[in-house]
Image 1 (cartoon, rainbow, N blue to C red):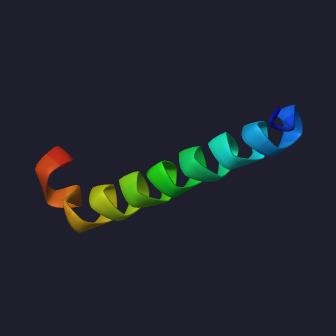
Image 2 (cartoon, rainbow, N blue to C red):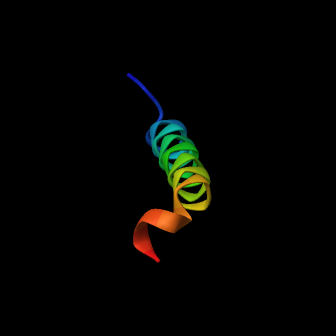
Length: 34
């Protein structure tokens, strides 16, 4: 059995990576939404 807190932590880390990537994309393409 997997530890619930460990699974939750991995999910949070993945969400943070996706959010960080999203911020980089927004910064790179800020001219598209301006």
